[in-house]
Picture 1: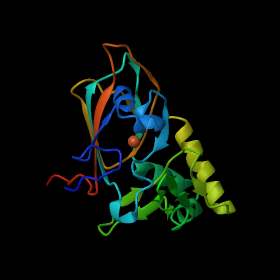
Picture 2: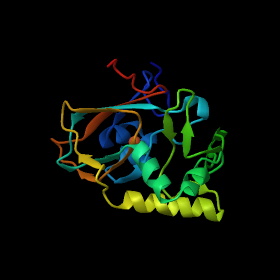
Picture 3: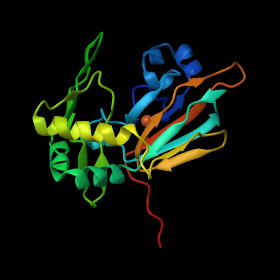
Amino acid sequence: MHLDSHWLTDDDAISPISVLGAEQRGERKDFIPYTDKPIKWHTDGYYNKPENTVRGLLLHCVESAESGGDNQLLDHEIAYILLRDENPDHIRALSASDAMTVPARHDAAGVARAEQPGPVFSVDGHGFLHMRYTARSVNIVWRADAATQAALAALNRILSEPTPWTLRGRLEPGMGLVCNNVLHDRSGFVETPSRRRLLFRARYHERVKASPV
Ligand SMILES: [Fe+2]
């Protein structure tokens, strides 16, 4: 229902994800999504304020790259279960309100985005699990206590190898992904002049509405 507005999105809050667009727009080229580089496991909008939590994610592929640009997907509820089975303390640690902090971002005018602490795992008012996570190590500050570090190591290990529930695929022209902002990554890719990868991305504050049984 509600698209998440983002400082890099077009006015309609739908982002074209492409390398070429980044060059044309100038400002985006420093951001990994707008390059051909791989992106580690994450959920979208992990740097958002709680009121702008991204619970729904939609990708639409207009053009795929000459090679690469695959996604792995893992439902974050499964990541939660695997972690909890291993040690419930991991869930407690990653549910702390300051488990993961995104430092403030500065631009020429000062603080462009305030420091954003928050939990990895949280449950919304309807009982649905949300996960806020990135495997990026730069620009992320994790709680330094042993419990958080142990939980983080366990999560990284779970994500480092495909699980029986990990999906892998590549969006081809006309294909799309609609999901409740599950964990995902992206492999690097190679473009040619006739095969430039272009995806449109929309992020929503609500989950995908369950269809009636
Ligand atoms: Fe993403």
